[in-house]
Image 1 (cartoon, rainbow over the protein chains, first blue to last red):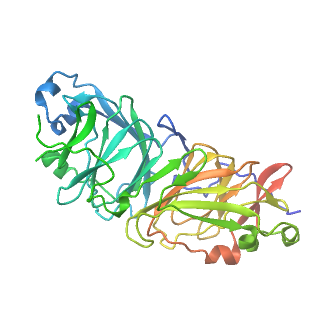
Image 2: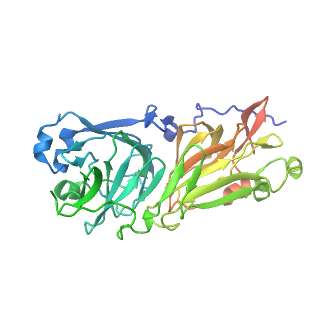
Image 3: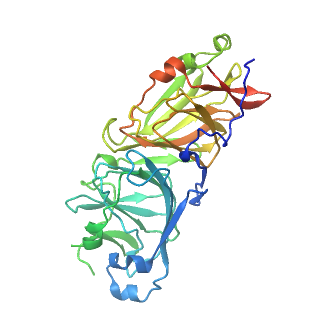
Length: 201
Length: 201
């Protein structure tokens, strides 16, 4: 027999700050534990990204469009770290344009990201630096590798919340300016009852 | 009405190589799609990591201990990319020591990794550069942020396969040498019917 026996557990002083326990509820987008952060975007926060201003004016500006939960075990900007999070994007439209996330490039274009949905039906919009824009279908179980060279936005084209998990670099950063000023090169609208990409410029 | 309508789909020529479709089966560890790679470790591949050589000699060297599936959308070593994968670690013991993965440091110590199990019961062993070693309980839904400064190994302490997903940097790399030569600072053994950490040196 070996002399010393130590029961493993959470009390180990060597554990360091990354030891903080976080638990996921895969299928519902739940994340719990002390370090989990959360923020929500309401329609009023996103009004600049939708095309139909008249339709927008008729909707409740306090309506929640999406909610993000995430764990940042290191500080934003730290080299080589990873963040983990989930987005819950509500179904709905502004005029004929589906609810969507703001979207961004990574400030560091070398930094990639993964998305993977567990519920709902979506479209991952990608746009390269030449503003070429294309869509990739999202459904439970699809896995999306997003190059840091591509702006990315998620559109809910279904009738239930779209829930997708993400993992990305702590040093990826966010570059919102291009999207805020010019949007993506295409919009996703309902056309004959189905989602369609229409060029926006 | 807008003039041009394009149905989004997988045929877009702008999509690039990272567009290859991969689908996950969360709870079973399934990954399907052309770019998915797979490899398995048998007991014979891992014989150096277990303590009890006499017990090892009585077991089938062809027994599969774990299997890894992963998607590498960029090349290993590419800066800032991400890989996504799953490990299925079988239950069992060599003597009183539970089946486990080989474990490694990242060659680039700044590069982090996430693990999150969906089935089974495990222990994530971490070891710092001073060989201090500690365990963190793994169960369905727990999320583990692994610093690149810590070697990491997973131990199956349950009686069913332990299935966990992982996301890590394409430029993390692998440093197996320390583990191959000296192992971790502690082993996980069954003691009075329960897992326990015992110092290995």
